[in-house]
Image (cartoon, rainbow, N blue to C red; front, side, top):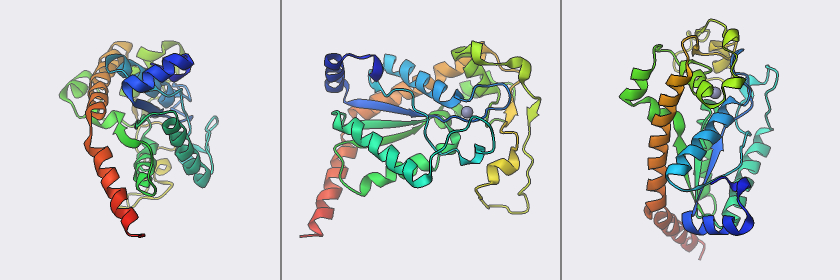
Length: 263
Ligand SMILES: [Zn+2]
């Protein structure tokens, strides 16, 4: 169920029946020369909608604010000041909670959010909320399955690559420009003399064209297979979140203990 498509009475019913809202996180950023700027949020939202058809939950409207400072040098990127971003994301979660959801799934559909969203989740122990947050990385689980690997021809992946381009071809072929695929996005390894280091410029140092992998062999057929793997895994996760009683119980216990410190 898509939040923005429901009437107010149907929305209330959906909150009652599911208790779970999915917020898919993508961004607006360059994806090589051949994929649209909205790739991550378009694919993430689609994954959420398809999965919620299998395991009912309410999907928050398409959302495209997150961590993508490393693409600020490319046209079309949209970012917010770090402190504002965190405050805004927290406020959006509170609004979802204020509407009655007791569980919120943060569906990460953008690699650059893989520090921000776990951190946002950790902040849920800063103060007591009316909801619990569950973080899920859409790529990590699906890409570890044998079926995922069997579907692909190339081994280097990361950004606008064979898998992301294939899924884009399955979801919105009219937005993909296969004639503009610019060879292979190979890592430049410019920070090799700093093993173990991470700097803000690390991603840019490896992929100055914001393209990582090889999209040349991407097809819509592969994309449909990859999408099905992701949908199956994520629908299973939604089901597990719906059944979960441990996280809310432990959070209640945690805040009860924390409040006793102040007595
Ligand atoms: Zn992407």
